[in-house]
Structures are given as C-alpha cells and as structure tokens.
Image 1 (cartoon, rainbow, N blue to C red):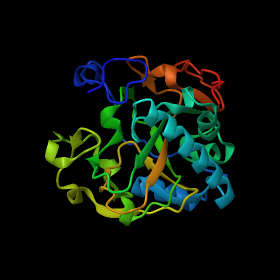
Image 2 (cartoon, rainbow, N blue to C red):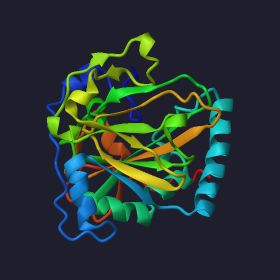
Image 3 (cartoon, rainbow, N blue to C red):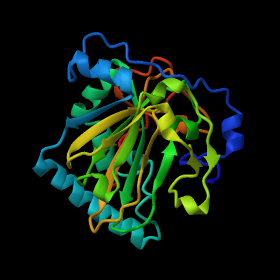
Image 4 (tube, rainbow, N blue to C red):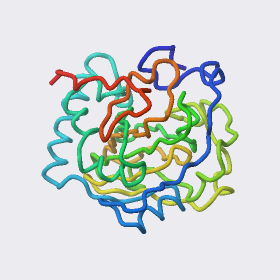
Length: 278
C-alpha cells in the first residue's frame, strides 16, 4: 500500500481504522434539479448510478484526448504508468479546468446540492491487452473520509464498452452499507487491492458503456468493477470525485479539495488555486 502522504491513493488499513467513519448511503435531497430531470435524480437514489450524460462534443473530447496522450507520454517517460496519474487537478491546469467544468459541476449539484467540493482526479487508462482488471469494490472503503457523500464522475476519454473493459455496476448495492471484502490475490490481477465476492447477491449487474465525451455518476458505496482490456483498443477514463463540504478528511486529504460550486461552509477543505503547470 501507499505510504502516508498528502496525495495517497490508497491509505493503509491502520490509517483507515484510526478514523470513525459513517459509511451509509445519503440519497440526493435536491428537489428542483436544473441540469438533470427529477426522474434522473430519483433513478440515482434508487440504483446508485446514472448514465449516460453527454458533456463534451466529439470535437471537445478529441482535444481532451490529445492533451491526455501527451501527458501520458511524459508520465511514462518519467517512470510512471497509465494508472499513476492521480490527484491530477492539483498538478495540471487543464485537469483543474475539467474538474471545475461548469457543465459537469451542474450535473453534480443536482445530486449533492449547491455547495460542492472537487477533491479527486485520477486517470484510469487500460492499455490494449494490459491484462489488468479492477475487482468488485466500493470506493468509500479506500478513503479516509466521513460521512460517505462522494459522487464519482467517470468521464470517457475513449469509448468504453465490454470489449475494452468498461465498468460494471451492481444496481442498488449502495443501500447495503460497507461490505465485507478480502485482500486481492495475485491471481485477481487487480489494479486495486480489495475484492468483494459474490456481487450479484447485492443486486443486478449493469454495464456502464459510454461514448467518448459522456459521463456516468455513481455513489461511493456502489459496488462496481471492470474486466481486463483484452482488445486492441485503449480504454481511458478520468474519474472526478466530488463531495459536500461537511465531509471530513483524514491524513491531510483535505488539501485536495477545491470549491467548485457554492462555498465551503464547514471550512474542512484547503481550496488550493489552479496550478500554473501547462
């Protein structure tokens, strides 16, 4: 696991155990959504996810993809890999611009309310035939945050389908709270390190197939996974994490949080400025 730093991806179990966390699903209470319909908000509350929502045009997402191609080449040349570009909004100005994109934030506000913190940005890029899967897991299990009020936006930079390893959800599984998991084994070929077995006991599997420029949204307690990319096509997505200001962060994760809508009425988040890089 990662060591304790401001930009941890996966805290140690001791670090997580040191926090008393509220791991319950908090449904949206937004009564008059503006970017989404009331039916879409209700569907999110019932199923724990929403898809697809078009954000970028073909021309716009091509520009984002071109930027990522160059960023990935630089990261790999420096010794990183296609999964290692995390907390990118604090390092790269163009990613800060994406996490604060008004069109994305408007959708998130219809789930979380008027005050929104953007705290996470991580490229999950499966190269062709890389053999790496993401086992069934809950995002909240990895994070030193409480209460569990984070919504993940998954932006498809490339087209994502079953052929190149798109995400799958277990509909309604957010309502079961924090689930028992086992440490992943080498045989799992898991990008992460937790595996929840027998996922279908919690609900119905749903394929999160997206066209480039579309997003899906899912609760931090929704059970989800993705198979390895066995195709000749890349599958790159940018995960953007948003929460309400009352969420408290351990091990310095508050330093990641940017106010993207409204205000931080709790004073829990650092709200760093846009980085000058690029």
